[in-house]
Length: 595
Image 1 (cartoon, rainbow, N blue to C red):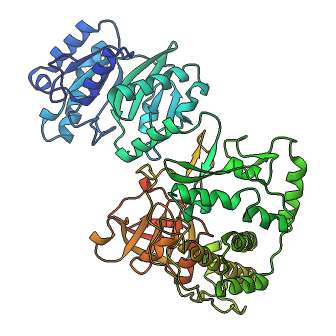
Image 2 (cartoon, rainbow, N blue to C red; image 1 turned 180 degrees about the vertical axis):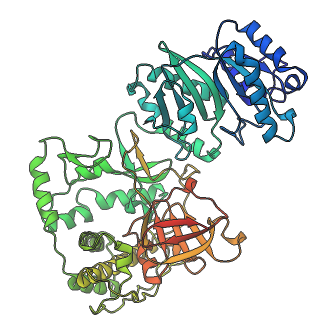
Image 3 (cartoon, rainbow, N blue to C red; image 1 turned 135 degrees about the vertical axis):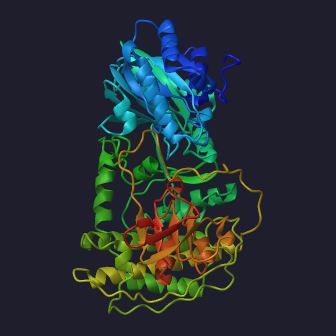
């Protein structure tokens, strides 16, 4: 960049284009006027200089405010731009752009001007080198002809998302791979994720603007870079499911324990065998940056080997091979026909809690059956509900079905999950009775069975905690990536994204806080957490509601929250929230409203 051309005189838009030119990127020729020059020179002199340096063309007259395109603020679209300006109209248009800036700025000391050769594009649009909210995907939006409709949002545009590992597979238009590859190089050159305006003429890619994406936190960018370097190059589908909530960042010893539960000859396989289901250990648990994930493809193959999630962009399981088709078919029949005697399961867990055995694996067979029963009853309830009634809402409804007597946890419980490093005080919640009136069209038996099996699942957690209490101790901490990674990781952007889901009914209003800021705020609070872990009971009496990135209706804490009447919503990304603001949440509908 020439020494005289700096952001204090020319603004970020101009100085960035100079950097791109110097780096060899194709930028249309332009003439720039500093903040001093636009106040000193007449528009006629400015127009003459442009024509002298760029003769025989039409022009694009653009702002380059000193406050524009900075790392803190883009001010995108706030100043006037004029395209396809002829020589005869250039002075008049320059005057228009300057007058528009004077209306918006206290001083023209903060404004410079850029006049670029106008190129009538075949295609034009915008590329985000990182998703401005999610952080990981690249986004390309484009249209035929001029790109002003893309950036102004006034026209329907084409849109494509991809991860960097799949840039070489993008073929929406012939120059797309070149565009994406150069956009990545621009990000590397400028040092931050970029929002880049581009155009294509006669198969040549031109860049007309690049500015930092201002909505991305540094942690998000670090996480995206880490995942780019860490994730496999082959197709995959990893997710933080409810299995991961019991130990979100497991130590080596805890991870080995979790794997042993699903191993050949382990308690999960024995439980399935007793049900007539052929389960195979596919080692579907994995750690990414020290954070626990389920490899959904491997998990699917443990029961249904003929199916795959990876054959569609929606990651919906579909049959893709005849290999293993008989085991798949038999397991499907058995799974569809599962029936559980809730009273019998209650009696079994009651006896185990009263006199726990010494063998965790033997007891875990029962615990796994409790989990299956709760999942089945929840699915049955979901299918039976009218469309306008949520599962979370139904679980808060009162029924006339007698409730089984509350059980008591065994003495000596330490911790609240499966992580052997968890030495927090064991917390139990006194189960309250649902108080909402049963709505017409809602099956009383379905609601009661779902409520009871949810409690049984919580009793199963008590038994696991008791077994592990003897083994808990402070260990050398497993190295964990210090930013919470996304709930779902796939090799291609998932077309179907899960919406916010209410898992514990109720409504609440409060200031939105995190675990780090909860003690710095006064008044009613809504707590955001990365994972809906059992340890959250420590906050239950301190907040009016909880929002979580991960979790589900069957999460242990969701069960406890429903018993406490604490509204909970899951599947909400942290970056979509404004902390310190007042929000209202509805734990039945999943609605979050900023007040």
